[in-house]
Length: 65
Image 1 (cartoon, rainbow, N blue to C red):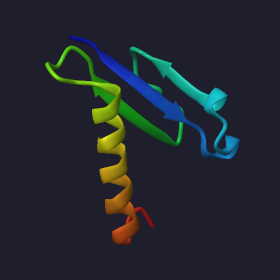
Image 2: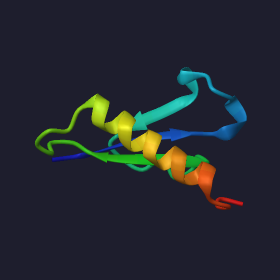
Image 3: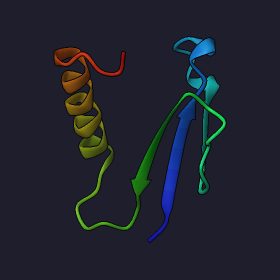
């Protein structure tokens, strides 16, 4: 199993080309997602569902401020 990271610098807008991907942390960017590969049943659909769930939590709460 390996971690895969997706990072984005918020100054680049919603351009998918601005997303950095790799197998090590993208700590220099504003927002980062870590996905553990190799988990039974992991799929792109489940990752997107997780992102939608995180988005709903951000919308409903005051954080991040």
